[in-house]
Length: 316
Image (cartoon, rainbow, N blue to C red; front, top):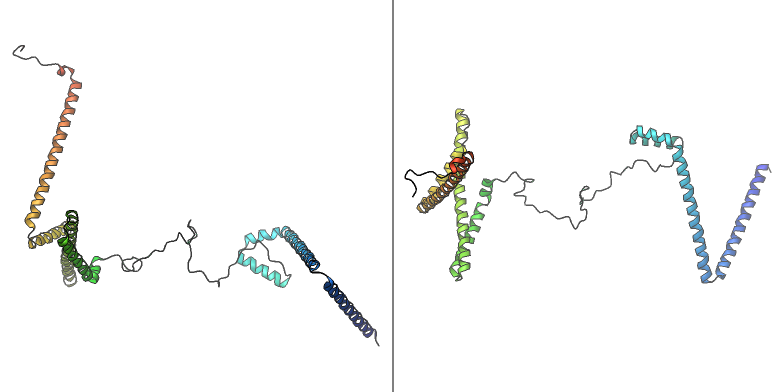
């Protein structure tokens, strides 16, 4: 037998003996554990837990001490990191860990977030003061009239799309108001209903006038565009004064058809007369105040003028 074989046999014998001793110890411990009462068992369990906890604390303290030593040693490395970008620094650090040594990851390294993490659908504004969901209100919007989903509000397009609906709704409202007015006997409710009916009728009339005006404007624009295309004429745009005249003509025509032109002209005359009277009163007030001021200035400049004048006819 060689020396190597003898040494191997000795090792095997030692291992077998150590295993047997360990087995005997375990059996003895189990017997002792079975002999203990419930309270003694609990006390022993607490002692074991305390020992484990103390051991963990020691290990943590040792790790902190090692980290502090590494930081002190790695001060020139921090200066280099400031010069390099985060990506370059991390690449260098990875290279060093893979090739030379397996270093611990430092605490003050830049934080890298994973791009694969899903983002929540409901996100609060980072700079807003009220972060709670109770303060956040839902804003409902109508996409037909909103500038985000459509262009700016166009009255012509709205009339073409919803004109019939508006006419129908307004007509039904007028009929219901008139029906209520005919049934009611109370004076206060009657006066209120009368004012509502007048307002609604005025709205309907104004809408009709606007439609007539828009139709006129579209016809003028079409004629002008045709002239520009066919004859090469310069584009012509109506002045504000002309547009005002057009609106007035439509108004007078409507009043004529409804036989209310005379009443309208009388009201207008009355209004003008009141305006003129008010203007005359203001003028008289201004002139009187102006004359008073003039007299005061004269009296202050010529004190002899304040004395009473002598009459030619002698004392009375």
